[in-house]
Picture 1 (cartoon, one colour):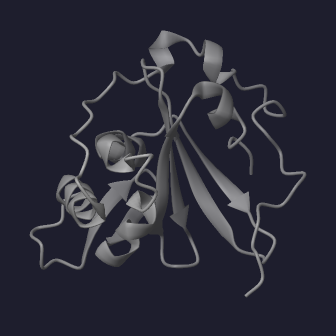
Picture 2: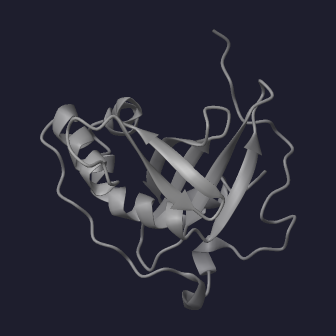
Length: 160
């Protein structure tokens, strides 16, 4: 299967004259939300993410969240991808991810080498860590990933 990557040369936040996230005005930042405890293993981490994203119970296979661009589908089977790198313990930031999906600072449509596109939801917070949530458009607006990062690194994802 060929490797898919983001296309080079897409317009960036600089092209649009948007502010650098490192010096973003406090009025544009969201208040920090609470982190949740780290899971003891992948199974526990998936359940933490699922319960915080609105899955009704452990038997639920999917749920939906309303974003500014419509519904985002969240499937339990895709949550493993988000939490599998245990050193990152991404489940801790699930409330940031939910807040970013429902009230992002920006949303970018990012083109990929295979002709597909994904949506990059950017969340800016009054904390050291910021949030990127990726939604796969081709899979029916499916939550694909989320990650916490610092403002400098998040600037690199502001293109499309």
